[in-house]
Image (cartoon, rainbow, N blue to C red; front, side):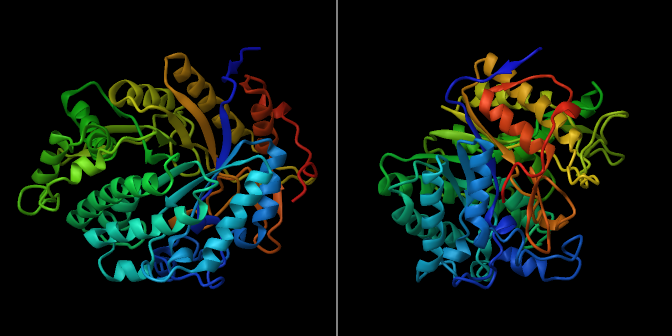
Length: 467
């Protein structure tokens, strides 16, 4: 059998986020987030659902840790809900909120799982949004207050900290394109938000290291390598444009201390920077953003295939004819993960890289025997893990892999219509039902290897996991 082998000590984990799995919307003193408000607006969520309960991880977290332990994993990547800790965004700390994460961390450690928390996964307290949100520089300062409150309570047991998850999504989808909370469609506001997210990261790095000197600190970026649809000057420039807009806008200031000049020029040309430049960037900001990182988290789902639209502007091309696609409409392109890892390693040289999210949305109902045969997800994961192993062979300092996600959950604007989980979640009784991919991933974690066996042979007993 052709196998890909991962090194001893490689971290296998799963990832979730608070807004997507916790629920407990009105419990434990939690305040309102921008996603609570956004989901309450008609038409913002595809199925009309809300994140009020989601997977009820707020009450069932011990059960979910049990599932992770049975999978044989080494780490759990989760996020800490800012509104649960500081209901108003700043000011009085809600001790009950910290108690929840304190107990979660303790149980994870007891189960042999490393806690790998993310401080911000898009659930900004609504009172801060009312004051301007991430477009306001004061929100970056408030993030430091939140960071200090959390690390003061958990820093004695948590070693690795992530400041932000995918600031591109928070800024561009939330403030520029309106697909995510808070639902604004203001390009200039989105660029200010992006800068303040990065600035808050830099400030938080210093705050974490001052409070927890032995901590390792990183940030998580989503990365999609850009390819031209055709080898024409126009399509190649479209790929360059996307790379600057999506990837380099965050990589360059973090690792080089400057925004990419060509991407800034693109934004100026489109009228997205009133005044003709980055007027919201103050002296010293980029030095703060350029703070040394102990690791970089990369989230990868698919590549970007770019072409030139009828108006001459860059547009995304549909997946090639015959290409596999997930239920998100994203092309299955496993080699893009290898390409992303190698490119980031060679051009930016982070000390260590984790794949902090990778997975596929497929809706596979249970058979008459109760078994959920999600062969397409297994195929997707196998291909991408083999791609990750190839990146290791090319010298990438890859230290771990976090599958998205442990549970089918509230998938932002799609509500509950997209299923990424290793476990299906019954919306009525909250029972967790393992899919074949859960059994397959447990085998990978146990053996540190990925083979090319037929996914149909990955037998899974739906009773094997006691939820």
